[in-house]
Image (tube, rainbow, N blue to C red; front, side):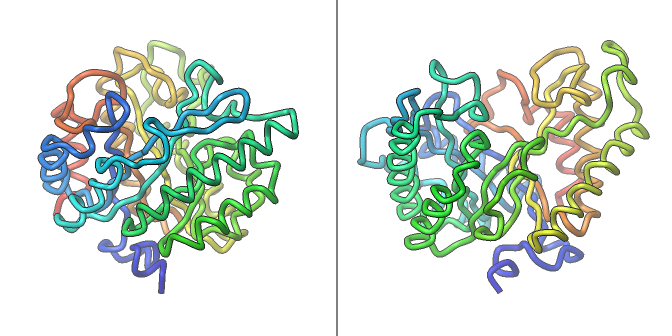
Length: 321
């Protein structure tokens, strides 16, 4: 019942597919409560988007400390997108991020060798994520951790975090694991779906030298391999798969390094996204994806832009009805 309500069941029914876009922020988040956010949601709805994700921040330190800007008081813009999206018939996934800059290379690098430091991390992270989940209880889905694969070996601590969130949040829960680590997460049974940051290499660099774009057939072959792996994990766990992030920069390396920024690959960005959306829409185990990324007000700078007219056309072609 829960999965059906949230659009994660009956994969052959187009109305239950997740057609999502992550609305990011060029700063620390106040744009999520702005008039620009309202206009952006109208524009996304016209593209056929039926879910959005956004990512409230807290900062993490090498000492295990976790703290949100402004302390324990949550500003209104942290929850405003839930109301705004629901007014437009769009569902919401709250996908908290830890701001790692200055402390760790990336979120997947966050780990703590000292048991006391690790204990502090889980204590403070658990308190923050639970308070955020309670404030966002009207959201349709919630991510208990994003790319924190370096900490998942502490299974007991993560199960405590999940139980704490479950106690205050009534909706759908997942964990956003990186594309190369999702099969090491030991607590999928405690969650409702397998969340994957889907930056899968679709071709190998030796087979497609830098400077030469792959063909649609080569991208299709890459998706054959990816979707076979998703079928295996879905069957093994009994859970549907959600791509909590999926994106390609306008880079000539987008097919074999999709996590990286670059240039010179506008046509490849469009082709890779077109193939991805087609294959995901036809798959019975992957129930949808959240594309990365869009800024409130369609800020036209930065990497992984979805606001380029040619990219918007690809999304509209795949999703608008």
